[in-house]
Length: 155
Image (tube, rainbow, N blue to C red):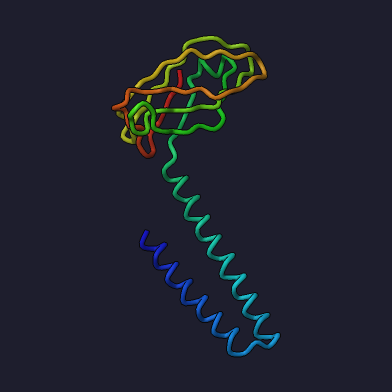
């Protein structure tokens, strides 16, 4: 957050400087230079914040894997998210499941922290036809906290 405040402070001073230049000498060449400078600063700031955001997303991301049995039965995963549910903190796993074959079975999700210790289990009934897909929610005990860099196994 301190970095954000510092960048905001610098941007305020830069904008003030640009406004002063515009007011002092509004010739075509100065305006063009100011516009190009402002455009460059804006692009750079946007790229910087996007890079920081992507870096954080990659660092915090958990790993999701399927058992060999599920993959043999035609199940694949797409995007997944971890959210709060039923008064818990990071205790709901939502997975986009893709069906290559007709499928109907109980699927359990086991969550492990970054040290490999199991922290929770959840089980749901999953059903889908070949070439279908959908979102499925695994809600763990409210005391389960799927942490940064956790590993989750669906089996």
